[in-house]
Every structure is written in structure tokens, then in C-alpha cells.
Length: 138
Picture 1: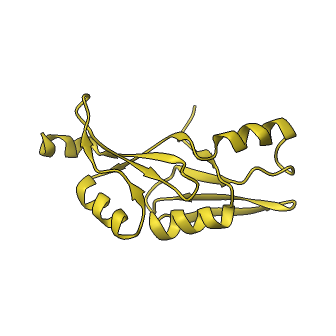
Picture 2: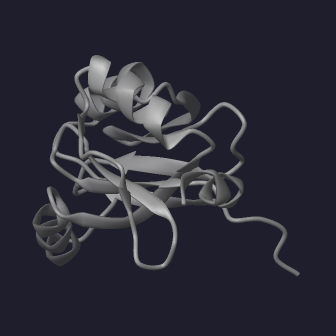
Picture 3: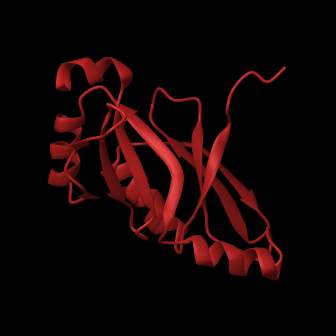
């Protein structure tokens, strides 16, 4: 049976700049860096997370021309990735102080509190207050 979720790929225009953003601005660790031909596979994530984000610069050593064209269209759009935080208001302030493009936390119709983060390529990531936090912000 399946034991865990490995990760998700986010396409980026410059892998080195993406690593810098995710580690220095969001505070993630590099969880894996694997050379592959003339490129590399890089995984980042929060210190305590087993799930990772692969920061992938579209490259012909890993993708067909059609896949590269499709991947380039995805750069700078909404991702299907979200993060949880126990204290969204403090996380918002901390990220804002680090120069992260983040929207103000807003209460959602479904009861949660949410912000949107834009990374160095304007990929949109969602920040959500963790379930335990919802009861404190009604």
C-alpha cells in the first residue's frame, strides 16, 4: 500500500533563483539534490515535512519538446499546492517582512483563513490556517 505523499513539481524559469526563494524567503530546507545529465532534480520542503516540492526548470534532458512548451505555460500561474500554518497572521507578517509577495489573510466561506503567496516566478501558492487555528479566528 501507499505509505506517504512524495511531492509535487513546480515549474520555474531559473532553478537557482527558485532554490534561493524557497530556502531564504520561505525557510525551507533542500531535502534532495540529484544531478541528472546537464541539469539536476532539486527537492525542497519545510524542515518537518516528508512531502517535498521539486523545483523543476524545463530541460530537454528530462522532457520532450511538447512537455517543455506545456511546462513553460505553467510558470507564473496558480499551482495546486497549499501550505498549512498554525498562526497565519504571524506567518503573514514574517513573510511580508522578508519581502514575500503575500496577500492579507482572509476568512473563507468554508471557514478557513487563507493567503496567497507568489514566488519568484509569480507561481501562486496558497497558505491556509491549520484546522486547529480555525476556531480561534471566528
